[in-house]
Length: 346
Image (tube, rainbow, N blue to C red; front, top):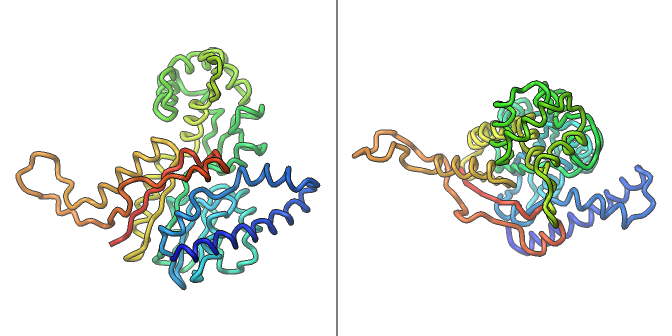
């Protein structure tokens, strides 16, 4: 796809996004366009949009998977791109987000195929819709700011809500169960492992002492008393623990591993997989998987000859991760930690 085409696609995306935003503003009763635009765009501007479109090598008549559809920003841009793709299979565990994406993308008719579910199950979800191979897959592993800012998710320490943290409201495990039933060893280990929080055990002891812990506000307050807050510290002390609980509740890292395997299996020869990660735990999994699947040998070090019979399934397109430009970070600060890695099926 040429740079000129990418520029036209980005401009078309901005124009149609503005029209959709105006309609949504009318439906939700917002009177100030500037206020609503600032509130909404800050949360839902697709990250690394131009770079992703460029790396996917969109083909006329191609079929693509947006494994983490969210509000539908990336899906919309793919559907608007030139040359015109045939369809986008839009997958999301959060039925609330997928409903908003369907509304946003209703003008594309049957070219947008909504699929409630887990991207780790993308092969089955595609097969259910008569799709056996696809020409490209996008996995944006970040969660929507709307999920943090909207009531009902229990993901934010800025609102006092029941401890939930499920993307899928029908999921079995909640943060409440973890915080109030896990023993000190398991709870502290989870916080250290998934939150990369060095004082995970101290936090676990404090939480167990204060049980029952029933709301996000109570949870954040207990963590704050354990860790304190340095003068000028911008990041809330509870951030790492909330990340750990969210990852555990939604089994995010297992989904990344399974989703990568599923994606490579679903790609047609020459198709590309683009993955945007936001923290080191995810990125290490993605990098390790790509390196392993692209290797010609995975034998243990020290063997005199190769005995593994490994056949590479992918080639790595960018050895150095693609990061947002300074301009993007300035306009969308939540993009600052994003890393894009791309591989191609061979």
